Image 1 (tube, rainbow, N blue to C red):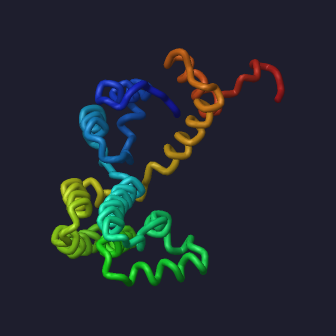
Image 2: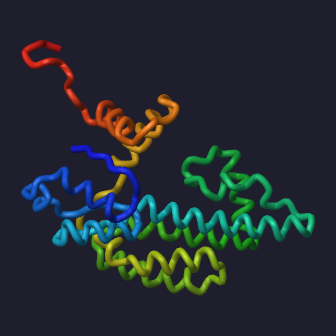
Length: 229
């Protein structure tokens, strides 16, 4: 089932649940989402028995943002001293190491071994990837305790800020190990929706936008009843 509402506030999100019957809502065990408070509040109100699972990919995006903030600040400081070490390196720090070409990896290996603040931020981000590999929440919790101790003492303000944010939401992150769900399918729809918006060069009103989304993404069968495909 697909439904679309306008806006990201709690009232708008509450409108999504009206598309589900009471029986359907009672069968929802968990909801994957980012850490937007309005989403949390809406689930708590409309599906009080469902678990909230904060999406792993959004969490890693937050940590990527922290790495990039450190890089930008350090690059500015180094550049003022005539040092271009970090110039043009954004892609290297934010890419999955497995996706780097051999030549890029050689460049990056030399870079990450330098005594850079950005390298420390990157190492903390990379270490957190192991959090998702545990089979049970109890082991992931122990890992997080060690990781958080490192991240919260690293003297890198963007990293510390994101670490505290994750720590605050930890219980709704550990639910991932119970349900193993992400917002991946929704992100796939978002990509299609963005393409629809781009191809239509915008919409005069939300009703038309919603209709187009449901038409192309809702799997509607528009063949008249009684006619074959």
